[in-house]
Amino acid sequence: MPLIKCPECEHEILSRIGTICPKCGHMVGYFEGDKSRKKYGKFFAISLIIPFFSFILILLASATKTLLISATIIYVILAFISSPIRYKDVFFTKFEKIFFWGIWIGANALLVTMIYNLMTNYVK
Image (tube, rainbow, N blue to C red; front, side):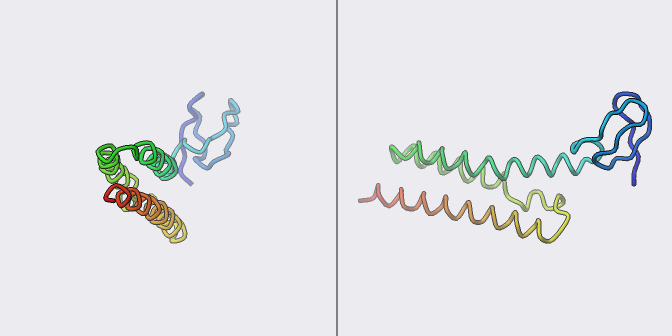
């Protein structure tokens, strides 16, 4: 197990989550030590927040067709940002990969269906 320096007293401790420094009592948290944990936490937050934000954006922009088109463009950009293919080095197991791809595909399928239904209402 790799060692890190305690951020409070500079004593070397294990980078494992929950390790307590024997000198000062500092406990290693989730985002300390490993850079991949920070990237994983960022991806997890993005994969939860962006679909919700896109849903609210499309819902509020459905008043007029021009607003809906601009919201759709913003949605496509946000869907690309939250794509699991951009974070493929973060996944540790095959289950995580399948899980996040499933969430991303499911959320975007629902949003595309909503956009399609809203666009067809403006054609009539």
